[in-house]
Length: 375
Ligand code: SF4
Ligand code: SF4
Image (tube, rainbow, N blue to C red; front, side):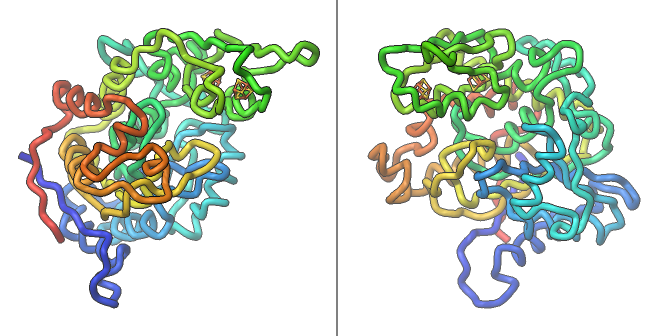
């Protein structure tokens, strides 16, 4: 059984020790980072920089605490993520969201190059075959995975598994394209986009949100056109369409969710045993991914911070906490009339997210049984 350390988000005493940054410091001390990382060793602090408009991410103050703790033991941390848009623009997004060298106390670098095609093909499993892991994450010897917990259009729950499955893999490989990149997971089942002209109100939100700019409305007849070969079925266009006029037909949601565990295993296969630890931030738990162009209000109140060396145990402990929490009023949860006792993220996104954990345990990434120690 793995140990998960936890600190609540509630503040009961008005002193630094009882603040969230103060509690994170204590959690990091309890983990005894010197057991995992060597002096002078490069350590990637993997986070998600967010996107233009999506400000609910792991806050820079927390990343700084992780960086400081690593420096205390003599390690050499840097903060990193893979690109969703071109790298220099993505660094500007990170900067705008408060993540830069000055704020976090360490270099902030792109893991897969300014064009997102600096990656290395790594053998995955029976679903994905192979996957393009960001070269920096492939090569670095150690990593602290800092994950913002939230919902997600496709995976239902986004945590540590998703942070490294999608977040440590490039969108596309230089030669094989998106089929061995992040799109390989999205496109599982080879769902095809169908557009319903009668329902479409020509609001163009689908065109605007496509990260690959592969949706275009023809000038004259205003017909939806998309480049099927380039589309990696991320589901954003279907998610934002207010009329239900774009649907993704034939996609296999269950296989997609399981494929995340397989990609996570491929990423972790590039590290020696005991060189990766995980911190889950159950804060500002919004209904959607941090890569959307906006962050809705939280659907569940802040729960706290968890830390563990076991990716499956920390995910299970995080989910168990979310299951015990009430849905928040005036949020997407109340819009959908989700009640206390309901599984909020399941009701919101209708994705069998627990399969991520089932598959991760089956693949030997960790154990769902855990011992929770509150610090
Ligand atoms: S699913 Fe939609 S938003 Fe995503 S890449 Fe394809 S066309 Fe673009
Ligand atoms: S988002 Fe939906 S309604 Fe708006 S243009 Fe696209 S298909 Fe039409």
